[in-house]
Length: 416
Image (cartoon, rainbow, N blue to C red; front, top):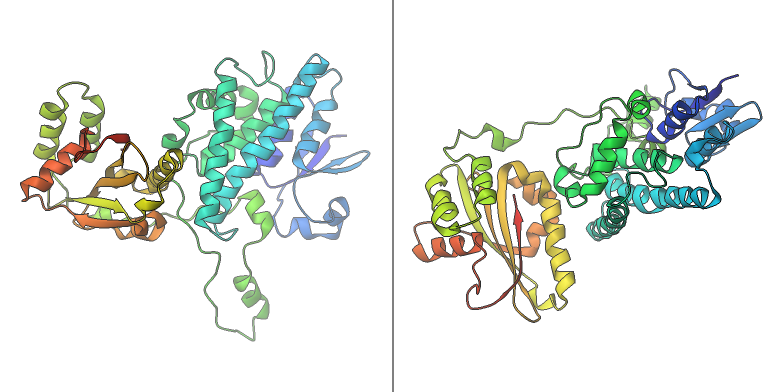
């Protein structure tokens, strides 16, 4: 008989077993019309997994839960399956990378994503820690993949299937191109795997998320009591269920129109400036800076200086650099509407952090203030373009002029 897999059709944890089945020639049937929060609460389901989590595999010898265990079972259902390698050391390395994919990649993607989706309380320091841990893991993975096409050996193994399924949620929900571009070998690996026929059959077309999702409140607005419909009131007031976070199967909400998209057209095309900035390698002042001021439209864009409020705390160089890097990462939601330069100034601590930002509109966009908590850590001053001294300071910050205002630059970072 076919193995029966109980899970929703969009559950990345179920994909592990389904892809393994494709490679192994094992018949696994996904139950039809599975409804999270209903199907997994029935007495029959709870007999298979008492805590009601998915996926669960129904086998002739009894149920199996936990997605990695299910994928292992499906793989071992075929004798001498190459998905488990051809030697003891390959088997150990496959298990090693399965654990790494779960504990270092999947766990940290979840710690970053779930609070933003409203499934957990959003705490900025916790998000910073999750991003830092994820970058550390991806850097290790990137180093390994620099000289390896697959995680183990020279063909797809179960480790690749589980790693790719875990990355699938990240690439699809929160890992933007600007984030993953730091890890080119991971990018190559992921897109190679998801376009393999056995992966593609299960995953379909995979697209990378364009922006980091905004923070959703974990609280729902209070609803008036309706004595005649107590069940509906209870359903409305219920907080997000843990299994909903695990499945991430909620229908995507339609995006509201950004107010900046409703502004009158500007003569300044932001992408053209970004291309000019990126492509100018020589004579930067004569080409890029002159081009910037020729393009700049004070009616459609505004320039802002920012100065970190707590520079006396910047006593460790790498911590200061990470602080600025985290700020730029969280500004990803503004990429379509902004350009920025952040300077870390000084040859010894405490280091000063100062920046220059170009925003669409004549004020700092409200959605950036609301969504990026770092904004309140800086003093913001609008640039007066009629003041030649301020214009010159803008030019120097764009071109990373050193020394800057008499001091050395520790680093300069660009948001574009």
